[in-house]
Amino acid sequence: MTQATVEQGTKGKTDVVTKVQTAAETVVKGNIDALTTGGHAATAAFQDLAKAYQDLAARNAANLTAAIKALSAVKNPADFFAAQQKLLTDGVQAAVTDSQTIAKLTAAVFQAAFEPVKQQVEALQKTVLNH
Image (cartoon, rainbow, N blue to C red; front, side, top):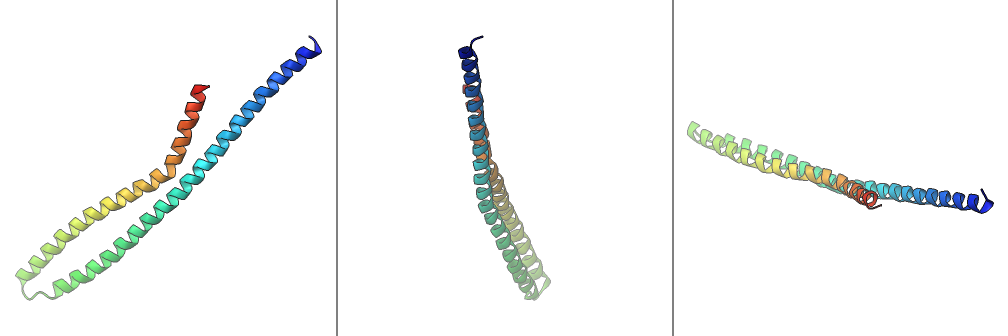
């Protein structure tokens, strides 16, 4: 084996190692960027969810106060049962609407957190499959 052959073989291996190292650095940077982006997006979505829970708690407290006033203002059993029925109907409708809103916001938190990571994984898969 000649000196030139050894140098050529060493250079080829060095080039491969350099390419692998560069690819690994790119993947790691992409993963860090995806996690950072997902973290920021999830934080914003979580703040929306927390605000929705705060609004819900405030609305429920106001509704409870209004319900107590409405029930205490009735003059006879018939009015009491009518008021109670209306409060129950309104309460169920509000609970369904509120639970749908909370569910959408909760899903948004998870989607915001994981979407950038999912995109990074898909990009990595495409890169690996194309090479």
